[in-house]
Image (cartoon, rainbow, N blue to C red; front, side, top):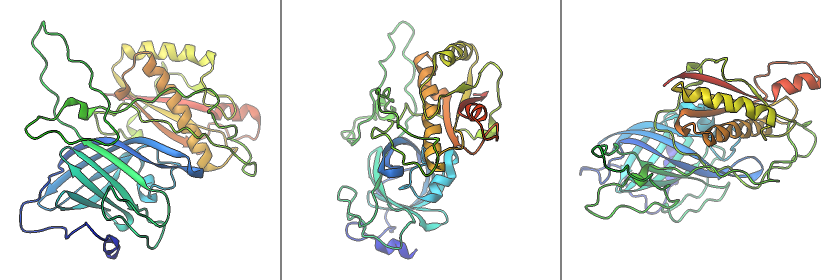
Length: 353
């Protein structure tokens, strides 16, 4: 726990004899903001579940889309969709979190305001020491870009209005800097919403990828924005199985754009999913040309392109999950273009809700 001594100013002493000022028990959703390979900005979904007992507690933290995000701690990236087990301590309205295996694997601090929580990963385990922050809003760090996390606590949904009354309008997305509710005001359903992903603009696809590792690669400057947040815990890939009605989607070399021949299959898949209430997992894959990191990011963009198309066809976002395997799961290992074409793909898996 020596790393905890690196926090200076404003952190106070965690624990105490009085009841804690905040209780973070429950499920939280939001997003994380940081950087990926080649300092490409990233903004993705984040999930957390906490159980507090007095001034201490434990839980699970999940950051989506971290496969190629070098600023995220390795232990958190390796945990993937299953999330990282964490321990936390409370001091006033501050929460200090460490990885279950120790602060050397991850150290973060949050500021809690009502049902909003904003914080930073202040040590990602890649360096021996750094100068941390005195408060969440006054961040100072000597090495590496920050990883910022914004979370909002989920509340039970309001009861349905009586028959004949018009439905409530959809809640707006959460703001990047949440504002605590006024005293005496119940939490709004707006605190449960998450932003949606805008369609990528033409020309923003990276010009190289799935290329020979020695060739320089250019990456997009525009990061993907987070999708509408899932309401259920993230599924585990092994729980899913292939379904013949959901056909594999193939991609051109170094592209994540959907081709006309594949959108026809996706139209059929959307119609089939409307009549079958299933959760689906979209796997993004790449051929072996290029670095592992680049191909992971490319597979992720391919999976998200399929997801965005299905959402546009009326499939609820909370039914769709994505994962990228990059070049790690080829269906063909020959060194020729016919084989490479089969590996540049997006696969479907499904399971009952």
